[in-house]
Image (tube, rainbow, N blue to C red; front, side, top):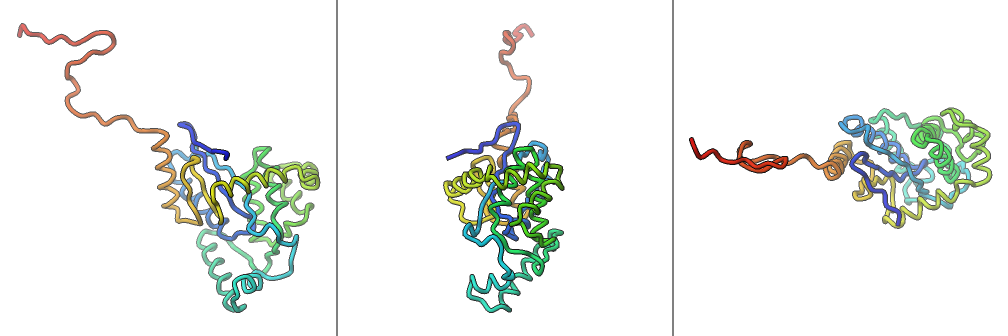
Length: 249
């Protein structure tokens, strides 16, 4: 199993999530709130990993989100719509404007490959953010290679290179490797955060939880100096010499 340990200079945070998961976007914002207030935020490295909630999903379906939830959980359409409205309200609380009416449900395998393509060029987090916005706010069809290539170009990547990588499946195995690592960790739902390869945080927790986790990992990898007890001038040896008590006084 791959390990993702932190070092004294860096805290590594590995995040498993899916583009189609509304709580993943909300959890991302809550984690970012914690990170913004964390004193050592410049020493935190964030790496996104692939997780498909429904690997067997059709490339695209015309079924609405409420219809999908009603069928999946055996709810009435009205009950399912209440679930959708509740998630949209939670998103709005984090400054996110979800448009479930425009959202197009798609298979996310290509999107995950695009994130790996971007990560190989130092733009993984930016690609993740752009895809989430395109899915939940703009209602773009993320099963179309041309749409994905255009989104890549929007964050400064080469659209033709992105298109070629998606069409060839260049990063398909990287997605599968992420999913295998998730299985090894026992991750069954997202978002899921692994800090320093040691601590797991499941779900879109409040920022305070993430702050506590970051603080704990930083303290373990960067222990504070000892708190001194007793007098500072007690006799001892230092730098090759020893204090000799003056007995003449």
